[in-house]
Image (cartoon, rainbow, N blue to C red; front, side, top):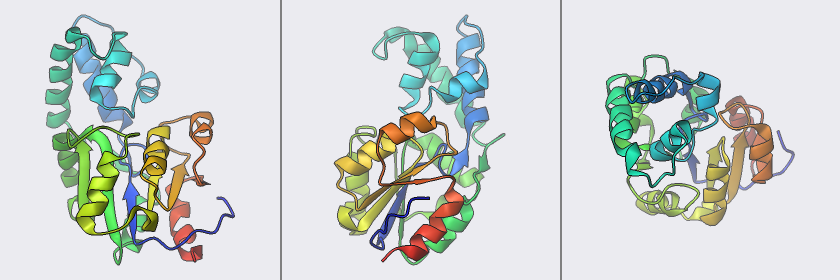
Length: 223
């Protein structure tokens, strides 16, 4: 954990996949369902893990080796969504430190800002008992995806917190980029997610945590 001292936040924005939850197995199952039902070979889960973070269409574009604008992705994308909605938390679990972090922030605004489609996001949160833990939720389809700052700024406006009084916590460069673009008070990178440490460090977050277990001590040390 970095020795950087940060201002105490009034709100914390969290990414979902790879930050609060390990959903790789369920995402991979949905992706492979789309691949196999459309004549392609299934991929290893660790390969699919590297495709996660920029929304479902980009995930499948990478898996199918097609441009994201290709209409050939429309049918596989529908299959992916249908399968994932039917199996949102078959193998998904909370990551270490997730529950403790959310509990430690009960007196502040807790926001979820994910590129996962909103309908699937709500099913995942409900399945894991997290639906009541957030004061605002933004998912794919609510606006431009991260690293665009729209969803962060929209959610912060909803809860009445200025970006400078908020931290953005996530495992990917999309999260760090969105936090910087929104002028959040701090961007917090988490290493035990879906993204390689090289990609995360290249995004230059203000603080890098080894895992979300380190967030509560960071909150306690904030000024």
